[in-house]
Image 1 (cartoon, rainbow, N blue to C red):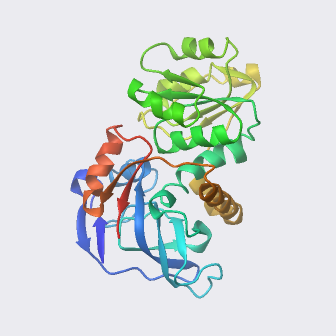
Image 2 (cartoon, one colour):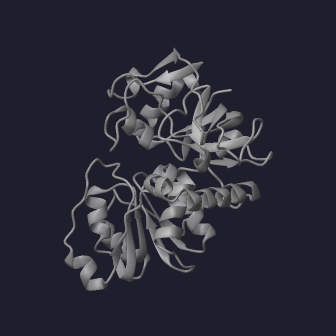
Length: 325
């Protein structure tokens, strides 16, 4: 089968299309014909050797995909050949066939397009885990989301709107403002054009934020730590700036706010039943049109490297999807 191979941790430029043997599902796994796979920042970090885990090389990148089941392991009871599914895995999505755990796969209604389905579990799963499971967000609370036009950020904007939150979207360039407003942001802040603390105080009347959902890290997170309301929840999700922040711990102490880690992949490994219920909920909302994944562009498998480079260059809004079939 055709697949993208990463043979060294030297980044997107060295990815190649190769012919490899199709994988075989273990007892708790399904094998799918991949129709679409999304391209995430995590995928780009993985092939560049910058993620917190390094698969043995060579490996097939791709953490999220959708397609049709062609075989199941002997322990699988939820799926059968012919079922339409979306699935997540640490690797394997950029190929004509991939395997995934039964617990990390979800059945798709006929009306849900494969391209949209391939963008939901990671993006909206991270946003749901952050806002619903970790922060216990309540309608009317104010959330500030950084990297708001990216995959996870835009999903958090969309989900925040759905949950009845007041969404303040943080972006790094003005050309992204229209998209985040369309997805439900009440206010948009370009944190490259002024002092973030002053900008947040301006749009909140000096009150600050209940929830902070940060994809960027570095100085942005350090400023957010000074903007929290009493009893707020500040959530580090990723460090796309490349800088892991440090903050004075008297800040959460004085306002009794919490710093809550969000690593949905580890949670899904430890609490697979809860994660499966979340995936079912997200796909139901997708089918009903209550969430609306944004696809920046659809590219062929051969352009996976270019897609990853676009993600690294911050020129993607929402997700790029690879069409495999």
